[in-house]
Amino acid sequence: MMADEVRILGFAGSLRKQSYNRSALRAAVKLVPADSKLDAFDLAGIPLFNQDHEREPPSTVREFKAAVKAADAILIVTPEYNYSVPGVLKNALDWASRPYGDNAWDGKPVGIIGASIGMLGTGRAQYHLRQMFVFLNMFPLNQPEVMIAYADEKFDEEGNLKDAKTAQKIQGLLEALAAWTRSLKKTRPDT
Ligand code: FNR
Image (cartoon, rainbow, N blue to C red; front, side, top):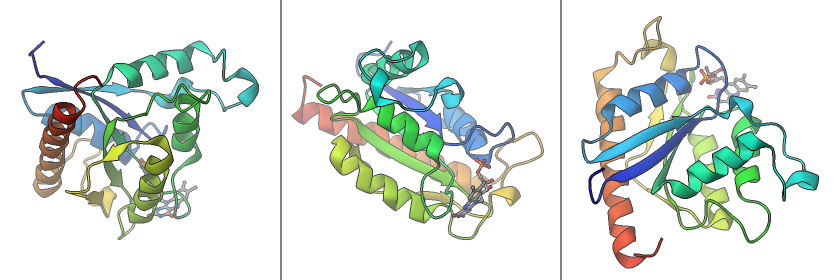
């Protein structure tokens, strides 16, 4: 491991096998800068949040929280459902924020990518996410914003990203996220 390697934990807000967002996350894993690392976590095994179990969460949740805590930065790749974030994503964010006083997201830099078959490319979901980051005390990367519109035209049948401009945007976001993470670490060396 490089001394100042930025370890990013990425996850997708869709469980669909052919998901454009899962595909975008896979593309991002390949586009991460050489001095950083992006590991993907699959949210499929995370059950519905129940506050009765927040102090003794299921093992998949414990695993997820540990991965979040160990990461230097977070990458969320999500669809937009009904003008907001999918329940799958909100559920995972909620689990890892609890119990009160043990918020795994606290102080984490975070980047957002979203893919939609529509023309607005998940913009509304992304701004809802940014609102959640206030209470979670996460530090979102403001720009570049990566909103992949008309996603069905940008991936091939196997889910490979075929649009060079989108690849370039994802690469730019990952570089900016790594730089943002390093600059935050300088001001908060203990995190
Ligand atoms: C959608 N879709 C959608 N798209 C969008 O741009 N804005 C929206 O508000 C919604 N709402 C919505 C709700 C629900 C329940 C579903 C299932 C879908 C369409 C969405 O962009 C499309 O299904 C994507 O393919 C979902 O992302 P994945 O699964 O391909 O990653």
